[in-house]
Image (tube, rainbow, N blue to C red; front, side, top):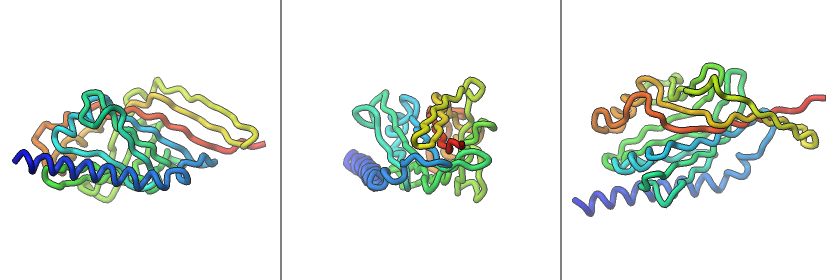
Length: 211
C-alpha cells in the first residue's frame, strides 16, 4: 500500500511539472503588456498547498500561464503555489484568456477544472465556470478586502501605456464552493472549510494613454 501511495504522489507531481513546463514555453508571448490587457499574480495562502498535498491534491494551471512553488516543495508547511495568469480587460471586469485552474486528486484520479475566471473588483467576486456545477459562471472567490484596495497608477508616456495596479487582493472561497469541490474530488466531508482564505492576488490593468 505504501508503494501504491508513493506512486500516486509521484504521478501527481509529474503531472504538475509537465503542465508547468508546457505553459512556460508560451509565457513570454502571453505576458506582454498591451493596452486592454492585464496580469493577475495569484499566490495561495501558506499551508494550503501542504494540506492539499497531504490529501493527494495537486494544483496546476492550463493554457497561457505559468505556475511555480514557493518553498522547498508543495509539502512544506509554508509552501505557496503561485499562478501568473494573463488576462484581458472587459467592461464588466477582467477576463482570463485560455487560463484554467485545475485541481487534481491523485488518490482517485478525480479532477475539477475551473474555467476562465473573471475578476470583478466592483462586485468583489471572482466568477468562473465549474463544469461540475453547470455551464454558467458562478462565484468562485469573494474579495474580502475590496474596500481597502487602492489603485496605484503608473504612466509610461514613451510607450503610451498606463498601468493601474491593485496589490494585496484577498480571495476566499465563495459560499458553497468548498462543498462543491469536496464532492467533485471525492474528499472526506469537511476537508475544505467554507469561506477558506485561499489566496492573495495582485492585479495590473494596462490601458492606452490618450493625447
